[in-house]
Length: 206
Image 1: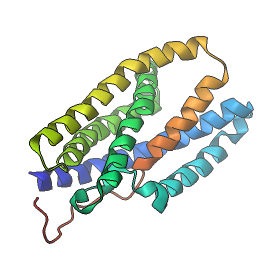
Image 2: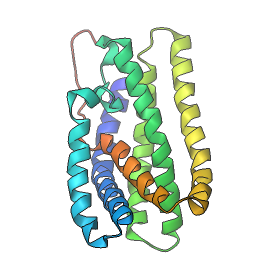
Image 3: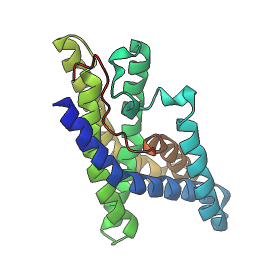
Image 4: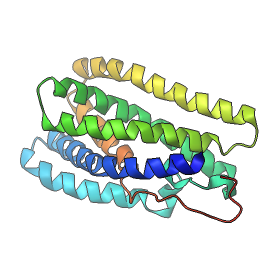
């Protein structure tokens, strides 16, 4: 079953990859332009930060946080696995905020929203698969259940708080949106990578 899920995730990542790259570019560039009030910087800043953020997530220090790196984490130390779960849960929050922005933008027919629908639909399924894969790491049935429902609970919390964050933005400082965009771009950049082909290794229970 896990092999089927990992293969499905591979194809979904192919769909989501260009959309997330565009979203990171768009969010980072817009964030810089909002902070500096120099809109001519938006494209250049978007490209540079897209490259920088993606590179950072590929460094050894951050790579172990990336949930999609844990296809076969049954050989990893628990701490590395826990970090991946934390990173997965953290990315739910900016992702939910961006999703809210896209939903509002879709009513205006923005191309970003159309791309967002495609990317987030594919990535939502990827999230579910990653939840299952990460939770299956634990040896006991209780551990698997606690892990899965903890991750689901964090997803629901992020979904609920997204609208509250939108209200805070409306009444907050001018720089709130800019920093939110930059943080969101950084966290979402963890999913900009070559789609993971399912691996086969000796001793895999899957």
